[in-house]
Structure formats: C-alpha cells, structure tokens
Image (cartoon, rainbow, N blue to C red; front, side, top):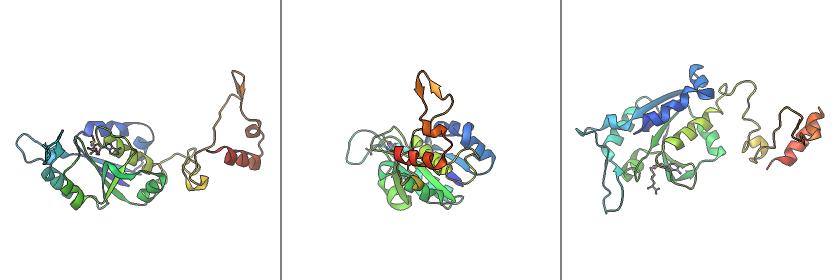
Amino acid sequence: MRFDVLTLFPNLVLPYFEDSILSRAIKDKKIEIHVHNIRDYSKDKHKKVDDTPYGGGAGMVMSCEPLFIAIRDVKTQNKGPVIFLTPQGETFKQEKVESLAAQKELILLCGRYEGIDQRVRDTLVDMEISIGDYVLTGGEIPALTIIDAVSRLIPGVLGKEESAEEDSFSASLDRMKEYPQYTKPEEFEGMRVPEVLLSGNHAAIREWRMKNRK
Ligand code: SAM
C-alpha cells in the first residue's frame, strides 16, 4: 500500500519509519511511504506558505497556492483519496481503519497553525479525519496514527507470532476491548496468573477471555 504525506515538517514524520514493524514492512515492500514538503511547492521567493486569516483573528492559515500545487502533483502519482487531518473531521475508529486498509493508496494532508484555506478542503479533500477530541499542534501525529493503524491490517505486515484479529475493537471481539494478557513467570511478587490460563483447556480459556474483555 502506498501512503503520500504532505507536511511542512517532513522530519517529524520520517524517523517513525526507521524502526520496528513499519520499517520491516517497508523493506518487505508491504508499504511505501512518500513524504512531501509543502514548502517546496511555494512560488513565493521566501517560500511562504501561510498568511493572516480574512476576517481577523489570531494565528496564520495555510495558503491555497502551495497546497493546490502540492496536492495536484502528488495526485499524479497516487490515485487514492486525499485525507485532511483536522479536529473537525470524523473521529477515527477501527471500522474506518478497516475501510482505509482496503484502499491501495492514500494521500494524507497535515495542517499546521490555524489550519488550511477552506477552498482546499472544498475542492481537493475527499475525507476529513480527527484522531480525537483535542487539538494538536499539527497533523503529523494524526497522519502517523492512520498509517500505523492501517498498515497493521495489511496482510504480511505483522509477523507470524503477531495478529490483529483478536485485538481491541476487532470485529471478532464484537468491537470490545481485549482481555487481560499474562506472560511468564506464573507467579510474580505473590500475584498468580489466573489458573484457567495454565489449564491447557482451550474452550475454558476462550470463555474466560470473552468474559474478561472490556
Ligand atoms: N484551528 C483548528 C481548530 O480549532 O480546529 C486547529 C488547528 S491545529 C492547531 C493545526 C493542525 O493540526 C490542524 O490543521 C490539523 O491538521 C492538526 N490537528 C490538530 N488536532 C488534530 C486532531 N485531533 N485530529 C487530526 N488533526 C489534528
């Protein structure tokens, strides 16, 4: 799956893919990440990408021109929907993760400052997603959240010992949260692992887990 990220701060995004599961997924060609600096598309001689809001008020707004040029350019290489990360968007849930994982390509647009000119949203954005009811300084963490959650549903991204099937919010757990997990030793500082998990009785274990999910 191909992800293109448009941001003013590529260095906030790129290091995330240098380690662990997603770096392996890139090496195994399960995912492709392309990060574009919106400033590179500014025609202004000082590479300006923002301006003051019409109507007054605090802060700056990301301007139309660099965003239109950047998005149109990326769309020549990526045919997926353009997703703008914004607190005003639809709250990101596992059902959305699953529907995005069915795509082959996604374009993620990260805002900064007070956000982006509405005309970009009206014309070039297909979908708006919020990662929760709070305000961050930029859309980079939300973009990484989407890439991470979607990538782990792509076949082959998680290793053989890992599985997304019984994770919290999965359809197989009726969208509920996962049951408690334990590992060795059987007893630690007087706290024992529930006996049923040591029993080898798979039906009883399954029943205990279903009862203890949240
Ligand atoms: N003025 C905007 C508002 O009140 O909705 C907040 C702008 S925020 C400081 C700057 C950028 O961070 C936004 O354009 C968006 O891209 C990103 N952002 C902040 N919080 C977010 C969230 N909860 N979900 C998705 N993106 C978020």
